[in-house]
Amino acid sequence: MKRHSTALRIMVLLAEDDTWRHKPLYSEVVRRARAAGLAGASVFRGIEGFGASALVHTSRLLSLSEDLPIVVVIVDSEEKVRAFLPHLDEILTEAVVLVDPVEFVRYQAES
Image (cartoon, rainbow, N blue to C red; front, side):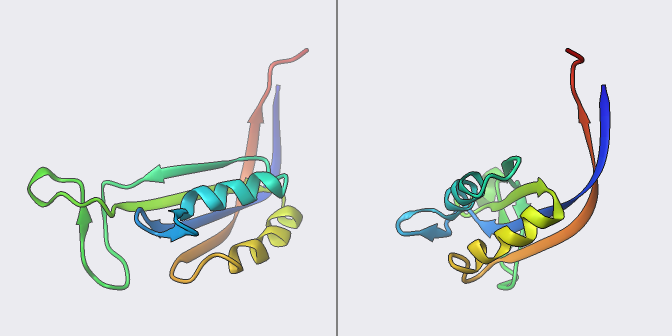
């Protein structure tokens, strides 16, 4: 069975070395998303990128960086996403957060 619905997607763009109380910041974002009851969150580690500093961070061998780009992706209903955004305000100091509408398609085995 396949269900379609509309949702909002949050993409939190961070650096691997960003921390919250001595722990990875991306872990705190995921923890708060779970505590808020959101449908799910995934963390992706980039292989190359740059931000406001214009310094390129890359995983290429000759210019190895331990501070690679990190993206946390969260998708849920507009109501839940909007309610969650203030939780990010409490922990983000330097980050970019994208919020955009998406079509949510869920495949589920019929019972």
